[in-house]
Length: 408
Image (cartoon, rainbow, N blue to C red; front, side, top):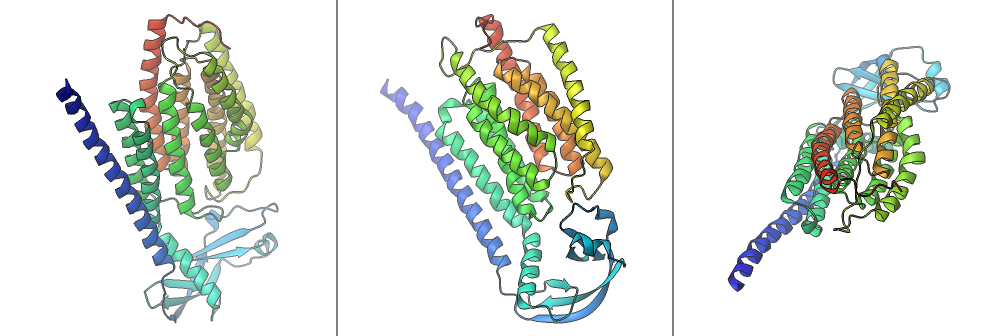
């Protein structure tokens, strides 16, 4: 008997040691990446040498400002070289030329800097140098960010090892590893004065929290709502940084955050009779499904029409009005499906998984149109876990014959 117990414990100890070593490697790798990145940005560039003057052409295709704009960034280009000039709206309106003379300087370590005047001050040189090197070092910073988020995933698996099956652990870690690869391969561009490194951090954090929340829902765990609150905060922050998807912001503030709290309370009242960790779940009736579909259509048309009429400035989509309008309507539909999904989750309905399918598809379209490729990894996680969750809930409903009839 003792031999059997020992044979069971020893492999688990070895696995735990491997997991701890992996966690330490990820943390060290993250710290090293950040160290290298910050070292490059703050490195001594030596002396500044004047090279030549360069005529640059104004990139008017990426401009879309009006009287409500307080800051107008105008980009001038010549091949790979570019110079960004910031104007007030009044100055922007009075621009009468599409060509500017830029002055090229070279540093001892080979970094080229461009200014709209000769003899730039030391502060101007430092700011320009750090901005360019930060953009060049973006893969390094993204690697550090990705490894940090990945280490959080390993911590979850380590601390709550007994709560997850082998499949769930493999699925969770696979999505996070894939997100890490995509984050390094497809860095985010800066938008609205926010560096792409910060935007990527928000995207990766959103991926981590969302798939953890999804996994807990599939396990019928009420603790998913605690994670969901962090999801909502992260997504609001992302939308504010990028200045887009305002239907999602409103839905998150006035619906998702309150429904998360109410759902946690409601799920806590309907624990499974055999396991306190499980929540008893149900399914929707036919006529109820029809009413939900009609409500989603009305919401999409009304909210999409209202938001598309707002004149909100963002350089995230390069001023493409048609793209902004399309995303506005898709976002309105996604928010409507999201509301239905939130109600389904609150009432413990299996149909919430169908809503997840639709919402994930709409979100994927927005991510492709916006070039947010790292978030496509999250959608892959949605699709795979939604199938897993639908099967698990269906088996539970079939075996328990919907024994808990009360919705509240």
